Length: 380
Image (cartoon, rainbow, N blue to C red; front, side):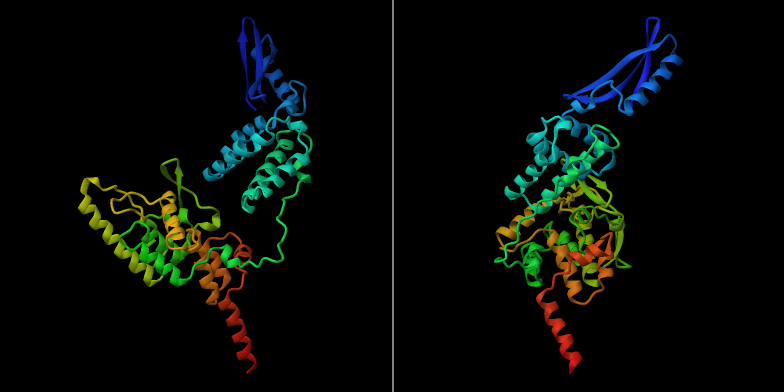
């Protein structure tokens, strides 16, 4: 907590920041004594008293909106990555504040929070989105109890994450939920976006490695070893508005080395030669960089660029697709072919083996047929 002392006339005063009330930062200032030493001593005593529930200001008068602004500024902006900061800001500003931001923090009750989440479920928000709301609220209110001591009890401890009731009459295929594509569908996509387009290389890298879109867009040539057949995933591309910059991968497990086969090596070698040819053709008008995924003029291919690709594949080709489909397809093809799930975990950059097993535990038709064949061959 920030504080200090200053002299006014013949008297020293101490002051400190006591948080926010009604959108305004509350500053406490008191007479500290006749000397600076005396004022500093009284400042330390005042801070101890305030942090242990002193009566300088009624912290519980702070509104939910003001508290989450304070929490965002002092926790989220300091401890979380850029994409998480953007996501949290969106949840706070567009959902939490409009719904119950005007409540006093001390007045918020579990039923208000539960109704908020239930409404989002009924409004057809996706499961992951509602989980995001739940996570922000849980973490925010928990820290309001400790370490901030704004309230004595976390109301979210009595709130449950709502779930849609199972429709027993509806049969779903988990691989459809994952938007897994077939080899034929991938070839159709490549035919629509051949090697001279900006989308060809990102598509091939995603299909052959299972890398995430931010990892693909952030890949630079110094992380590609075409002689050894390896790609080192060390960074991701983050867009701050229209400005690209490097960020750290999703987790520690995401920092990895991926072996690549002859097919992708050949594709990347040819692409690197095309880049060199384009540099000569465009001359001073070529956008110089070390990125792997670039347009003919050297401009960077970003996540926003890939959105156009997904729209075309879905609307024009009629294939249910997102760039993440390539990751799911890559993993499923490996597991269908008998690859060890531990090896798939490392290749995908999952921090835990259980994540890989849980995500790809669905049985595809090929896996079902292979299982039957194994059993039949065993009993013959």
